[in-house]
Image 1 (cartoon, helix red, strand yellow):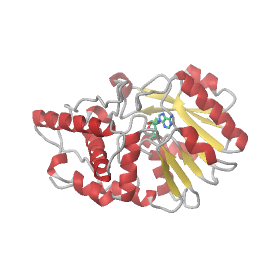
Image 2: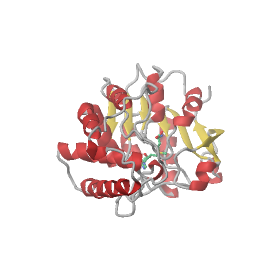
Image 3: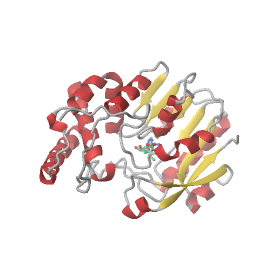
Length: 298
Ligand SMILES: C[S@@+](CC[C@H](N)C(=O)[O-])C[C@H]1O[C@@H](n2cnc3c(N)ncnc32)[C@H](O)[C@@H]1O
């Protein structure tokens, strides 16, 4: 099956990502500082907001620091930056086609999942293995149940195949990959497969830091370590340190009573979103309240 080169908006995420901010970009942009130095996004995920800002030209004079703890996600971004054509071509092959017959689809999915877990748990990978793992990661993301990336306590990806979707499906949107690759290759853009504290070490006065951690009280299993309430509290202490350094900080989270209380000395705005990708079916139907926390007002 040939890759479908479809028309897309210029800059949009390559992956479906739980907690992705595609639907909230305009609202977040309205609440961003009009001028800032460098830009930091250490919970990058699908990167909807950074891509939105880049597409709008808002990052043209900034150095940009993007990071995430997820090893396969960031490995895929390094491959998209350094080797986009090989990535696109491999995903264009029969091996990664979207099978229309459900039993074939399930067999292909399980084969890919086993191989992905094998590669993802190797301590180090050859370049060809990194490309293979990245292709498998995107294939599983697009054909697995609801685009979920969830791991168990052993770090094994354990999502099942999506049995519901019947129509054709694009695994790799070549335009989106090429546009993302161009952005990641721009001078001054750097990527880190690290924890948020590490990425934020160089943030200084006047820089803009957007933090979109795993939500309180909902899906957190992006990594085998999860993201506990203690992690939310630790993040708040980092927000306080960034505030003392003079950074502009914007945090999004679910609007739980505990998060409102934790950030009570900061500005709080609320918005409701329908999440297209959520681990719980009930949450996918309902609008959820999100909180946008800032240490500045415009
Ligand atoms: C809510 S998602 C971010 C979604 C993203 N804003 C988007 O639009 O797709 C949270 C992300 O935080 C990452 N993460 C979890 N713990 C982390 C940590 N300690 N440091 C950095 N990233 C982490 C997860 O891998 C996940 O991609």
